Amino acid sequence: MAIDGLIILDNFNRPIIQTSFQSTSPATPLLHIDAWTTALAKADPSPVDPVLHVDAHSACCHLQSGGITFLAVVSGDVDPLFAFAFLRTFIDILQEYFDAVSPAILRDNFDVVYQLLEETLDSSGHPLTTSPNALRDIVLPPSLLNKLLTGVGAGVAHQTPNPFASPIPWRKSAVRYNSNEIYFDIIEDLRAIVGRNGVPLSINVYGKVDANSRLSGTPDLLLSFTNPQNLVDCSFHPCVRLPRWKKDNSLSFVPPDGKFTLMEYRYAPGSFPLIQDASAGKGAMVTTKGSMTTSMTNKVQVPVGLKSVVEIGENGAILNFTLIAQTRSLEDLTAEFYLGKGAGGMSGVVVSPGGRWEVVNGVSTLKWTMQSVQAQSTHTFRGTFGASTTPRPSRSLHLHFTIPQSTFSSLKVDQLRLAGEGYKPYKGVRGRCVGEVEFRV
Image (cartoon, rainbow, N blue to C red; front, side, top):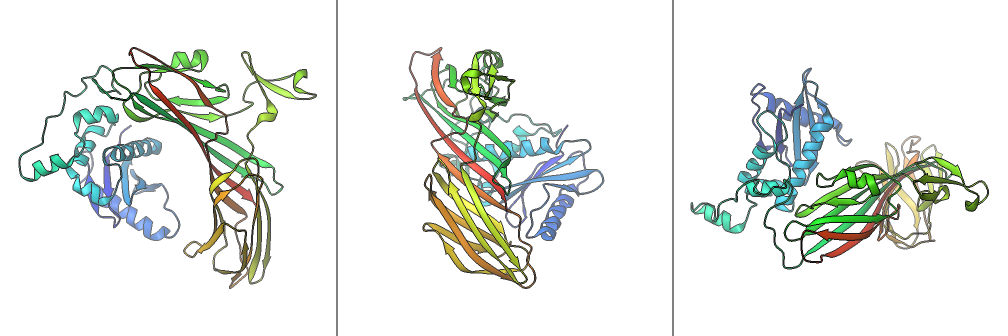
């Protein structure tokens, strides 16, 4: 399973850089760029399919970031997810090197980008070195001094260290900090669909633990959590020792230097066998895992409710939406509702204080935003819109929000132990939730 080549386009779809296409014809890059621009013109304003079939033997997978389009050319029996995973990894590497990604930044650092392509993707199209710590030993990050010396023909200021000098692939050797500290971010993403009667049809919570390590030497860490028993479908950074997690849900690892994702998971309360427990109340069911018990009444709840009325007429419709925040305060709340093709502007709009609204003309979508929503509060939006014919608005309203300093799973870091070094590190932990809910109306 391999990638035939990678093409990077600017915001005008002009090539910035591409890898060599040794196993294909010289016209292959041009054919795939033409397929991308053609699909983009036909799909406007709708999104382009993530996988474009160029001919009977090849396809083009694409991602966009910072005004740049990344095209991965694949052929034969290659899983598109393989190409998307590499594209996302390469974009993360660019952001690690340059802090931001834009056409101007890539052009100014063309030599660094080309070296990164050569080190991350070999001549056969297989991913090679994708660890940022290992790459920094091979490809020097750009600096102002190096650019000045290169511009006057003096070469780089210093030579690259011995690549792969560290016995641990994901960690650099001889790391030293004046202040030893490590930070953990527990980020959870709620995806839910709620029916017209207010009953959730589908709820999923996906989470990850991001870390930023600034520890000297080669620390060996043991991280334990509270309430980890309902985490399923877990995936880990290569530094994590899996037997310890299987034993007691603790993470034993030697961390990389800098930012990395320690683990990803799905929160599934009640995913273990059910038994009846008289102490939990009549008819109550609990789940068991070893000696742990969790009441089934402690399932995930959507933190906001919706009451909606959509009255469709011959030349327009009346909208009446009421959002009800439950027990948590929300921030950066955005509600989007598709008005239908040919819909006109809104009139007679009444919106609760603190709310703003607009109609995005290109996609005929009503956008209602609120910066902050307090718990146990109610917010309304009422208005009408016209249309040249009988409108066909969407049958669902999409809601996006964040909840700071909170997690749906109540997952918390309990203890961090360090071995192998003589210092005591500072530990910082914070949680954050983001939500995307589809309400049927």
